[in-house]
Image (cartoon, rainbow, N blue to C red):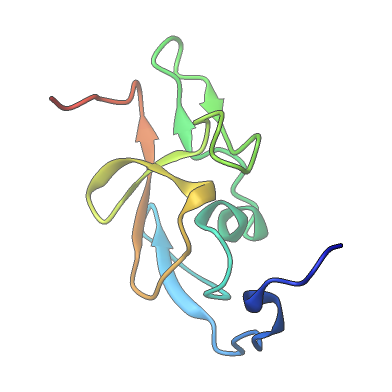
Length: 102
């Protein structure tokens, strides 16, 4: 009934990628999400709410709640749980409300 996905059988990369979060260099396996990489380094909040600047972090880990929004390489409103961490990524904590562009 259940079959493994093709990705499940590929080997896991042994070479970590280097990225930055708020200017601090960090490393993680390239197969994981930005949210998972941040969790691994003890970062539990990746944005602040517009009302009261309350810290928020990944909650659902499946792209539904939008609590994991970060700015990646200058692009705001990126879902950390739905984005794989890559070499050289510059990730910053998102401040306030997300902006919707027309």
